[in-house]
Image (cartoon, rainbow, N blue to C red; front, top):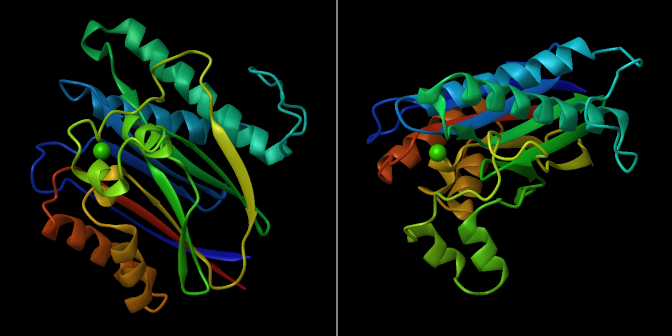
Amino acid sequence: MKITSEALSDVGRKRKGNEDAHAVNPEQGLYVVADGMGGHAAGEVASRIAVEGIEEFVTLTAGNQEITWPFGLDETISYDGNRLKTAIRHANRRVLEATRESAELEGMATTVAAVLIEGEVAHLAHVGDSRIYRWSDDELTLLTSDHSWVNEQIQTGVISPEQARSHPLRNVVTRALGGRADLLVDVQALRMKEGDILLLCSDGLTTMISDEEIAGTLRSSGGDIGRAAQALVDEANEHGGEDNITVVLMKFEE
Ligand code: CA
């Protein structure tokens, strides 16, 4: 299946620096968004190390069936699912190593949302509150469940999704690269079809605009992902642009 993609990252209207990072690597079928956290520009370092670490592992293991799995093999998921999951755990180790080497980087962390393509199958993985959505048959579906404090409160019925959007703790993630060495990564696989679009984004998009607004923008863009990427970033900025905004859009065509 042919994939076209568009990526856009914007500092937003309130922040001085952009702590998001992303990768678009069609050769490897790899697409990543990472959202860094930490003082003194450490967030920028964390997200960049994570993206580079993931790209490095995926590239090194391309076409190589003789991989030594540094964290063991998960037999419940496919070979490429394992590659993506291991790439993220490898990147986690890189972030932790960098944290130990420099006092200034202590406490830095990053989210990750990543897609690895193998034929018609998209392997999806995430850690933290960066998200992956699918646009298919005029319908938007959120494929990931945020590893965040507010999402846990929503799941247990303590607060509503509406309350979560303005909650003072809405930025608190419960899982991130740079935290635990034995990082848990959520992985799934989906068969894609012609006309489908995947959206990877940082929370600078989803804390500013709702899923209904994202769906409306994808609908009115009529499959033009370049136009959609720009419109999504513009809308997040029009709603306040309180955080860095990164979107990666992938369109699946025959
Ligand atoms: Ca963010």
